Length: 48
Image: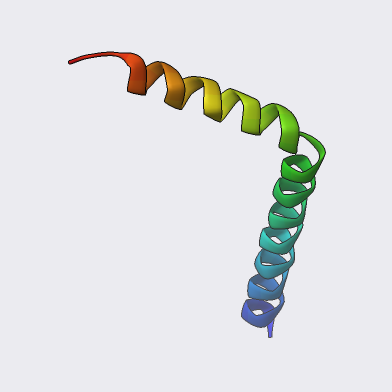
């Protein structure tokens, strides 16, 4: 019985972490997009 409770709690924790990650991604979507574009443009403009 204890094992089922523990695995259930781990599932809840993972679900909460995923929900937080999605929320942060949605809140900072514009800033993240600008940052990623800046990094890729910087990388693509360099000649190796």
